[in-house]
Image 1 (cartoon, rainbow, N blue to C red):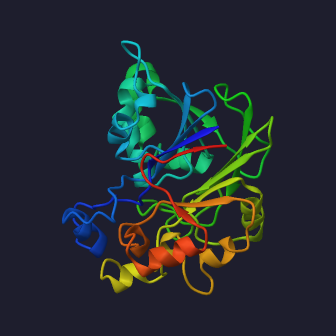
Image 2 (image 1 turned 120 degrees about the horizontal axis):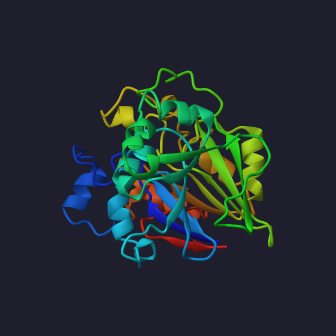
Length: 304
């Protein structure tokens, strides 16, 4: 399986258009230790020709432009053969509108996400007006049997519900349902190798930690360094956990748990522009790397 990181940032990217935090300011001033980052998305393939896209970032057109393996080779085609949504957040779904010329798209998501994208944020309804009827919906049922995608016959997929939060626009905000947020495990049926992708994680439940420990590649939520990061910077009145993201540092932070996991290659994704680890000269970056934890970046390529 080939895994390509299309976007590694949380919502807004880096630099965020209206943000002058240390990282955004530093990047604009040419600081070499800070990378440009688009909003979170990955794509995977078994054969290098047909791709499964996880989430459709608002930056999807830039991401495709920067990824030659996704470029068409025929007068009209797309290398993206299926799209999996792990939630209905704006920074994970809005880019679907940019892919309207490629309709219909094979879409996989939970019934809760499907509901949001047909009602509160009706992207699926809107796309019914484009060629082929917009989307072909395939339901993902968390904690159920695995499902398969025809373009990756040697792999199986299964979903685990995560405790995070519903989108800010949703009537379920601060009272999320099981199925509003999922993590996806992709397992090679021939080798047993596993990818576990969970870019939004608000609570570390025992069954999630167990699944993390069995992964070969762990792509996990690295949004914030401290729980009060947004408050301290004057950008929000909410804690990270209020937004559905467990912080990296602290007694109950993600690093403590990752330190107990021996098997997986640990890679952070969905990293907010305010997070000090994004400056490779920061003490937080040095501390993170000392724990053998990597930071994903746009254009990162992984094979298992």
